[in-house]
Amino acid sequence: MAYTYDDQNIFAKILRGEIPCTKVFESEHTLAFNDISEQAPHHVLVIPKGPYVCYDHFASSASDAEIIDYTRAIGSICKQLGIEPGQAGDGYRLIANSGADAVQEVMHLHVHILAGRPLGRMLASG
Ligand code: 5GP
Image (cartoon, rainbow, N blue to C red; front, side):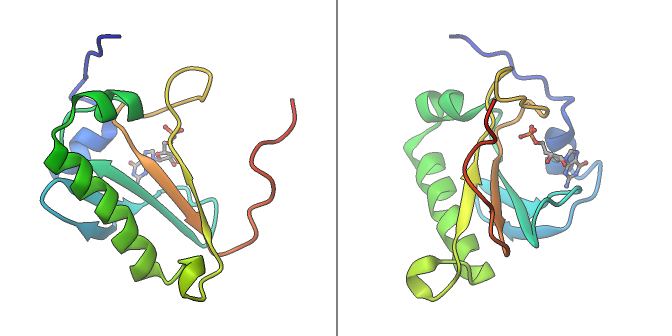
């Protein structure tokens, strides 16, 4: 599947500094900031700096350096937030909505990190 990246999406504007965000973490290829409409005490959006629409686009098209940086960034953010279950944190959920069935609203890859309260089962039925 070929993807067309629209650089007018809201996260592209955040990356260019055209609209503000509350930054949580930044590295060479990755930016993380708080979701504007938080669904949990910790609700962080992690985005690659490159122009990737969704997770499979990134996984198939990004460089090894970008993928390593992004994956390591998620680990660093979990550590920063103190939510790692292996380090006495209470855990977290990662969500990467991709495409129409997942109701992806912003067409720039983002992983949600949700934590800080019991999150219930993975999906509501139906
Ligand atoms: P999606 O449904 O695409 O997975 O999630 C998009 C997320 O982006 C939503 O949780 C929404 O609250 C968040 N969001 C939308 N616009 C902004 C914004 O301007 N700033 C921030 N920080 N988050 C946003």
